[in-house]
Length: 108
Image: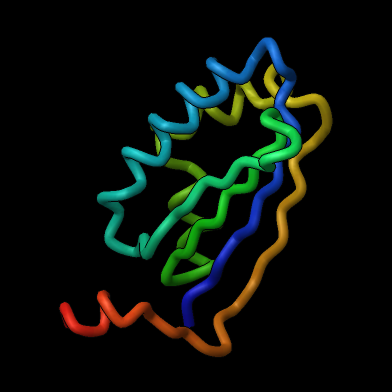
């Protein structure tokens, strides 16, 4: 069963460009991983330095054993203490129901 992680970040304002550069590198690299489903980055419209990452993977065990140890994540993880105003908040979710837009359903 797939697993979704919701990760909230409060980025130090002066570090936002660096944060985005490092995160974009990770997102671009993980996109080709075989157990990756999707990721979406959101920004709080009232606080541009508050972001939320939503990412779904096939297996929680794979994320813990393989994905978190990928070399393309190293610089990102090492930089987080310098980039964030407070520790990131991570919650884990399992799908109960999935609905797709009509446009996606027609393409299937």
